[in-house]
Length: 286
Length: 220
Image (cartoon, rainbow over all chains, first blue to last red; front, side):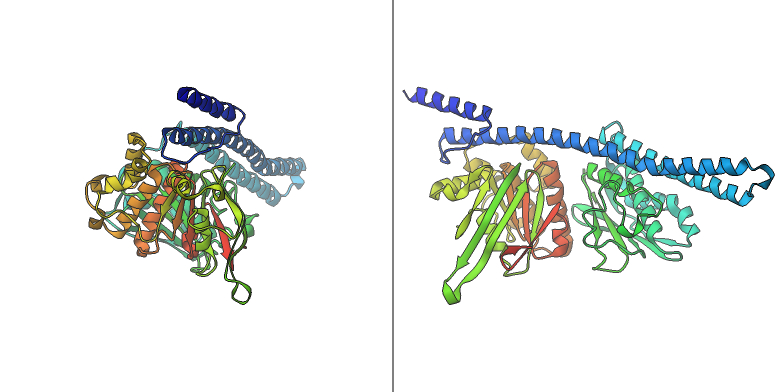
């Protein structure tokens, strides 16, 4: 009799789950109540994995539409300037060398933008699909910072920007040197981009019990509180900078890399201090 | 699908001239796996809200639904068991059991429920929180930051539907706070754990995926 009742109850639980309307009925110390609780957990996690699949599908969809949107502008510009260039050269001796130079320069600029975009997207997709794995191991933080600064120093000197690095010789953390380099270069590149000519960018690190932090402080306008949550989104660009160069994928890629190493990244709002500041936190141990 | 739903929550104290509206119609929905912070000054009603969400206090009216269950339907022991299974708490004052080891503290919610410990999962949690070398010691031997890491591990151990954290860094210095917040953020992602954190500090709130502001008992 008892057995039948239990089986009937189990059957009911299954039926309810199939209809998607299972709810726990009892909360007591009985095995059946614990079983109900586990059953609910299981159903919850399978709902979650379905939701994640759906999210992934939507993400891919927006990714593709983002790409087509982002590639359109440079493509259209290249097309336009090529036509202008052809028109100008067809005028033979009357052609203006100045105009030709200007159009060629525009084409080259748009071309670089497209190249950078495609390059970032390729990296991103390789990273997200796990084709290129992020392999964190113990490395020197100063080594990471020095190589990253070297990569942007040419661009910085063009704008007469001084990048300073306060060393922390003994500091080690767990990260993938190649990928984290990529991430830090993106942050420094951004700092240089938004810092006015003749300004400065400061890099320093500090150690906590669980994480090591790398601060990148610049003289730019910084990030407002409203923008904080958005800056790490894909194709997001500061509201005042919609027309500037850049494609707004750098910080997104940066965050993806840091998160794969179990670290995290945070922005300091510009009402807390003048200028911009981004902080990267890397794990001290694997 | 939301894991936590608060519908038009009200909590009034006193009456007529002395009526205090601690919460005045708060509605909130939290998705599975989300890390949400609720920010407000002292007296804004944020602690009252957290007590309602955790079933520690009854609202004057309105409902709290966790994992599809309206908790106002639960009485006495039922509510107690529900909380043990569905909600993980992280308090400002850590609230570890002083007489048992760090490891026993971490698995306490599982043992209380008479379930067996999922060793792989617990090991992963302990690893992530950097507690491997502290498992055998008593909580009193640990620093504040380490104690709070144990409290996070304990909250995660039973894989609750939701973790409620009340000013989790309120008793820690700023350096240690950054560590603890970082771990909350990364574990929420890694273990797909829903977390609701209460704080009065804007900078701390910024660590979450979403920020909810509460003022004078209302969400603004």
